[in-house]
Amino acid sequence: MNAATREKPFSLAKSRRTIQWLVVIGTIVLGLRHIMPGEASRGGSFDSFCAFGGIETLLPYLFSGHTLKSTNLLNFSVLLGTLGVSLVAGRAFCGWLCPLGAMQDFITDWTRNISGEARHIRGKESKSLLPLRLPASIDRPLRYAKYLVLALVLFASLYAAFPPLREFCPVRAFFGLKMTTLLWLTLVVFLAGSTLVERFWCKYFCPLGATLAIFNKISPVRLVADSHRCNNCGRCDIECSMGIEDVPGKLSDPECIRCLECLETCTRDNALALRVLKT
Ligand code: SF4
Ligand code: SF4
Ligand code: SF4
Image 1 (cartoon, protein in one colour):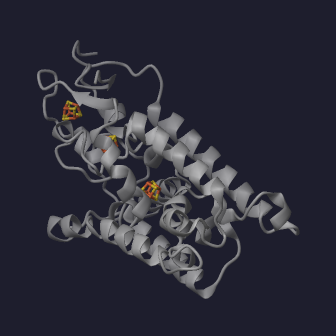
Image 2 (image 1 turned 180 degrees about the horizontal axis):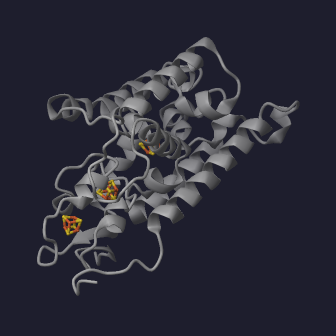
Image 3 (image 1 turned 135 degrees about the horizontal axis):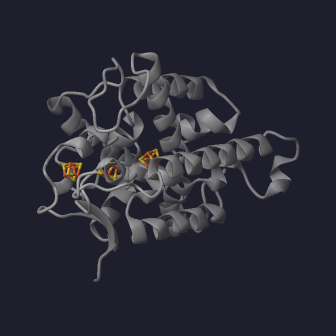
């Protein structure tokens, strides 16, 4: 082994996948629980466990003292927990704990396998047809769409009876188990988008991701790069699921979901490291 390279003590990627599977299984159980008879007696609707539900119902609660239908004070607790994680570790919720983020990662694994990559080789450009990387001229402006979705949802929440995103929510489409025509449509679009583009929903449309993005700039737990040790090999750019270019120079980028795939793939000793920054 080269003196500048290192053996990984354990696989961050495998640990992340394990946690993501546990989150997905937990969310499926939550969905099942809420299609059983007597849902109302079991401590709230499926929607009330959603962090973004807390954002959707925040303004109505502040202005009228009432939460929107299908949400309740539990949404604020879940939201506070999510914001707490983000305050410490930026968008780590997106990289590790979000069931929708996990589903997109699973879809990317499967589409890579199906479309021509028998075995993923870390740090090497994928030979598979899918997922695509959109050209920068489309990708960059589209990244701002999630902020527009957030603004529209907040505005609509002032006049809505139910959370505005409810009928188009991919989490409900995947895990809610009470389908409507709009949710079927949402599911089809989500599956098609995630098959074509890695982390399609996170990159372009997720209003919760837009909310959490600011925390990458202020959280004390961060990835840092050492320019003396990094040899600009580009392995981390290849592995970045959010398609960030020049990862070592953009470790506080709002798009970073703290998945640590770059840290996992970097073979240069301490070129990238996870640190707690002093404030
Ligand atoms: S951007 Fe949205 S969907 Fe993606 S992981 Fe974050 S919260 Fe989940
Ligand atoms: S941080 Fe590591 S993987 Fe990324 S360019 Fe530098 S040496 Fe390569
Ligand atoms: S920069 Fe690293 S931690 Fe951030 S999204 Fe890309 S691979 Fe994940």
